[in-house]
Image: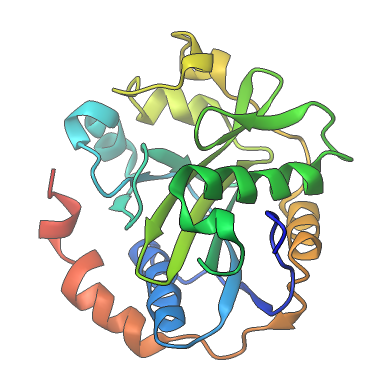
Length: 246
């Protein structure tokens, strides 16, 4: 098989749930359903107000300006994948990709899977964003400025690839709510958030169209795993022990 993504058989789901933690639970639920024989899925969601999402191993004290979040009523949640904290809000598209690791050989290896998946995104966006490229292990950059951060959760046979795409987010929110990260890719070169990130200046709608076409995700997923989401909320995402684990 070629070392690029076979584009057959991926469903799409454009669904934002009313609860921030429930959206993170839904991503993991789609992964668990795929492990149990369910479909591969490309999902999109957007959050209508500022929010902070920590990686599974992220530390509040290291990554988040907690006092500013509390003052402004900005919710903080924790996802199942690794990576650093991100700010969501209007103009930030969240995409979640659940893929079988035997779809192509590259997906079985963490670093190769990032190159494979992000390379597909670069090809999809390049006509609209000349100069977009893969950067670091898991970023997309326009020139030397980050426009997308990505992370993964991997099970036995499937992976969940999370990503944010900055389309027109108010970038001042990053300075307000995120500390300087404890780890950084070499291409960041010590730059603060304002100097390091930028927007693509495309609409989330256009990005969804490009991503869906890239994976030929033509069949809508009309039934999503609500029972699994509810269980994950009860056992994990809705529990303070998960949110405050580090």
